Length: 167
Image 1 (spheres, rainbow, N blue to C red):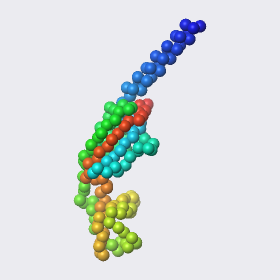
Image 2 (image 1 turned 30 degrees about the horizontal axis):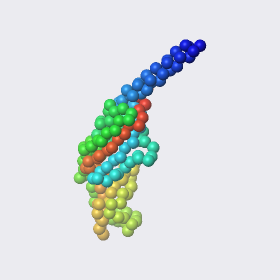
Image 3 (image 1 turned 120 degrees about the vertical axis):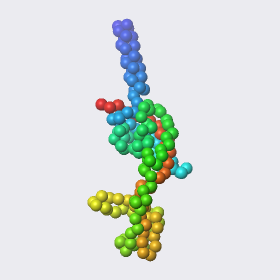
Image 4 (image 1 turned 180 degrees about the vertical axis):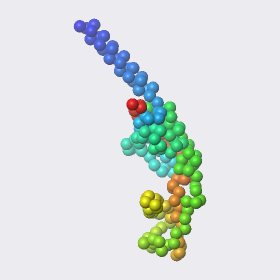
């Protein structure tokens, strides 16, 4: 009886150790569901962080992250920490000068409430769009339809919290 119990106990220790070792070998690859904590810094200022919050969970390879970040996460394991620098072309893109428009101020219902730097929403061809107000005068408003982080270098500090391998 004692021998059987000892044999079973050693079997479970080996099984649990092999499960831990298997989990330790799981790496980020396409199709894996990954949870990360991250802090995004741009021009020395924290833009976004999951610190003190739930981690961000995504499916790797489904374009749910900027391309430069997703590419640098490949091969990391749970517990990995990495600082990642993403250039504009691999982040939110370069600034597109054709994405800036001058619109007559009379096009806005509440023109007197508009402010430079304000992000406004509208519809274009049935799609919701955002634009940042860059300039206002008595006749016109200059709208920038680029992503607010376009043309900026992104600095991420990432910690891999969990990886669920491809099923």
